[in-house]
Each structure stands twice: as C-alpha cells, then as structure tokens.
Image (cartoon, rainbow, N blue to C red; front, side, top):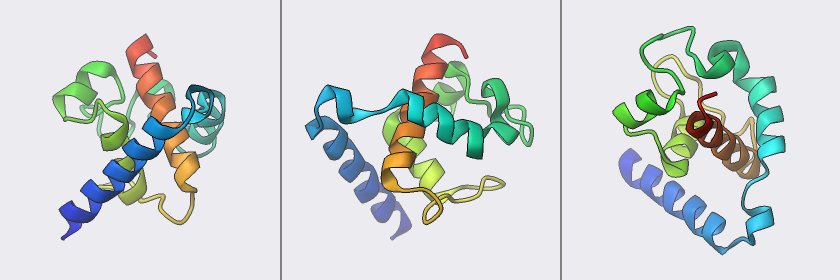
Length: 110
C-alpha cells in the first residue's frame, strides 16, 4: 500500500512538473533556500553527516536509485531511516523545488 501511494505521489509530481511551463517547473533559487533552511544541517555540500555512504552526490544518488526528481520527492515527503518526513512541514511545491535543486547540484558536482 505504501509503495502504491509513493508511486502515485511520484506520478502526480512528475505530471505536474511536465505540464508546468519551464519557468514554473522548478524554482532552483527557492529550492536552495528550502535546502539551506531544512536540509543543510545533515546534507551540507551534498554530504550526509548521519550516513556518510549515502550522500547527495551523483554517484550515490545513482547507486541507491535516487537520481530522479520523483525519487527525491518521495524521500523528502515520506522520510526513511534517520531522515524525517517533511510532508506537512513543507508544501508540495517546496518539496518539488528542493528535489530539483538537489538533483541540479548533484549533476554539477555540488
């Protein structure tokens, strides 16, 4: 059931991003602010202070099947292991923007 819900959320986010005009699809500046305010304490510079093997670097995102907006949105929304869920604390737009920011930074090497 949880997997189905996660798949539906990811599909909805993907559809929303696909249908949005390019300028509105993701606000990387806003995503950077959200990241700085909510994520940087554990993920400064794309690292991971809790589990150093699971960073936000491109190689690790690919290794753990997290190198997509949908996967990152799911992780931020629902949390996993030591990472808290941000559903209810951040809006869907905030989560989409921070996911786009993380993926963009990973692609650029942080």
